[in-house]
Image (cartoon, rainbow, N blue to C red; front, side, top):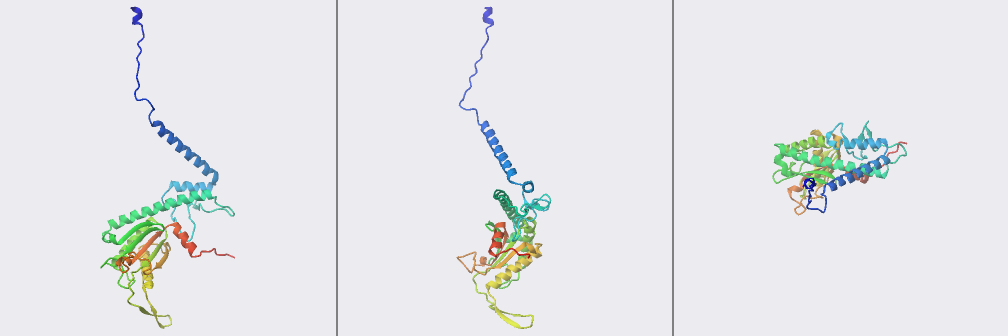
Length: 306
């Protein structure tokens, strides 16, 4: 009986639902693989870049948005006719290089990818800021159905269109309506504040034949001349009138990169060439690809200093 009392008690535990040990290890493994990829990418960048380039890339990631203004990654993302300027550290440019030194294609691809992503973010944020400005302004919100915003391959496009009985200009004239002046000045403030990109201004008319036909003007010598005045002249004059008003609203004159009059050659409503919506001003906050295309198409060449 004494031996029976000393016999050990064995407790058996049955584990149900076998087959696997849960999914926590998968999350940990995925984190490990991601960390390793980042580590090897870092090693690759360290191997193909010099100290100046590494400093520039570091600054871009510290301040990813150019909207922060002075002290951020860039106060001038794009400039007409120039290459991308990415300031860093001491105000140098990432795209500067010593004589006879070429930027490696792999490095350029990384730089371009980062710049394009930053540029897209700038335009997306600008569009949201413009929408806020329109909604919060007692004057502008009454015209929000006449202001169309969209991001296009060229950049952020802002179209100010005519509406039946509410035109942007006096009939057959480049004279701006008082409310059009307000609209353009408010747009100028927001664009200048949130995007330093250069802009393009295009004037459009409908297909109606310009009624004035011929105008007279006096030369410096006092000679009176007569010339035809068509929708081509009218659309160009309206585009320039918009340019002047944007500048009065605070936009630097150098931020305007192109002013064009297209008459009725590009209709908004192709099914109705005489519709009021065809009479419009189009403002494009241009991206770098558009600026490069303009510089190339206009035949930009290097100027010899010899």
